[in-house]
Length: 447
Image 1 (cartoon, rainbow, N blue to C red):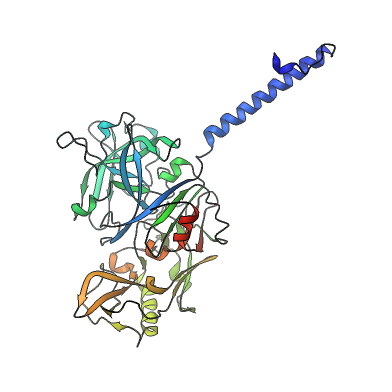
Image 2 (cartoon, helix red, strand yellow):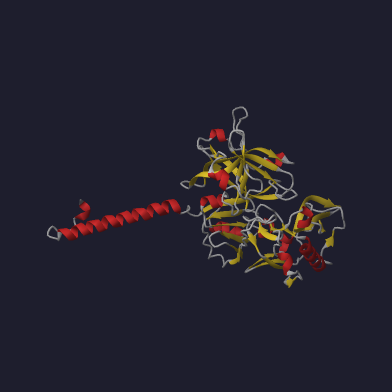
């Protein structure tokens, strides 16, 4: 063989046999390592544009969203376009499925499993249905066709249900991921179906075994939301953003014991305190840690727009912010107006006023990291709400108690211009203040 012409004809035959054996052994070990890494390593880093969309779906809390973060991709064979709400607070990704067509034309807002040759429903006897749905808020069940049935229910009384299935998710050729499990939801109940039809479904990204990021095996993912045009980017895989600035990391809190009010697969961090314009508020540490029932965990949730704090903490923050804005902003004196059922500190700003005055910053202090909310982000203009010649702006922190939610929830409004890295491998979240529009340019992500 041409490969072995380096061996001289007068060399020792025994040594020649040993050399050949060593060569084949090296080839075998190389192939073994290659096969191992080919099947065990996650795909390379994938980058997606992240868009904001004004809509009212899906809502896990007792009010309607104004803005959600949208990822667009294709699913099935042949590929069908879908748009999914990025949600780090949910496990199961799902698509609104429709197995019929109107005038033989597919509904562009829904996924049609009949038209996908790679679509596979999951039987209720499968290990996926039996073992990997244990963290669902409502246990999976068997339908009349012995298929795995899932029901998702939210606090605003909206719900969706359908069957678990698998299909190919096209994440940019050649990175097509086959066999990803998702919910094919054919029954969706909502108070506003017209708004809900703007997206095809939801991309579950929490730490549960059936979340998209868990199934794909990525060690980490990141996203960044611009505060100027509200566009952003999503990175699946190692972001390698040392060119931005060092990330400050806060560890994820894990409790293995099941507790009634603790979400074990949420991204839970430890809130240490809150500052207003650098002043640390007098908040007892005991109210910032989960109690014996699990109530009081702090969750980072891209599927929620604003930030909500338990009543005692919210009231301290509200009082201090009100004191520091006295004489700067005019309070809306209307006890009957509470924005989205939880935000009761609102102000009147003249319609012709283009810029808000200098506002106190609010800092959420975590173990090892800090999230600073400054400028216009501490207030939110209520769409369509006008009083005489004034627009209405509300404090962008709300009272969890008014929603019946036993947790602190950090929403995506306060994550604008913050690089958010979810490091699953090291069980931590990294934060860094950054211009997300510049980050998009650096990664070459267009609109």
